[in-house]
Image (tube, rainbow, N blue to C red):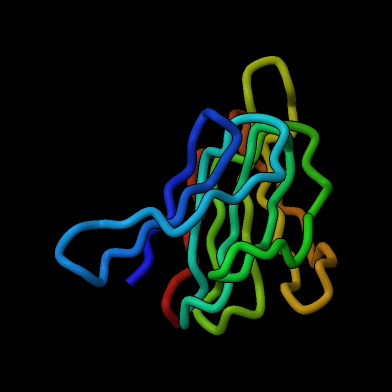
Length: 131
């Protein structure tokens, strides 16, 4: 029962919601610009964060950074795990930069699997279907 929140202050905060009153569990630092999106994998064992610094970072629930995924040339606006948690998708783009792509990353290796292009504007959200 942990909530993750993303902020313009370049951090991700973790909140314990298991009791009657929410309690701050920790602050994840590593991004160099605003964090725009967070997503948990299917079993809560890994958290992805996307930032205006153009990176996706992977974290354990106790706040350890597990990797940084680099490849976007603009802000990462959205992140999502595949239903089996083997992949992370990231959507990118911002005014004045022409990335406008979706990238699929293999979680185990941190390698980019593919880049999907076709949007003429920023990609604001990505989501995998449950199948």
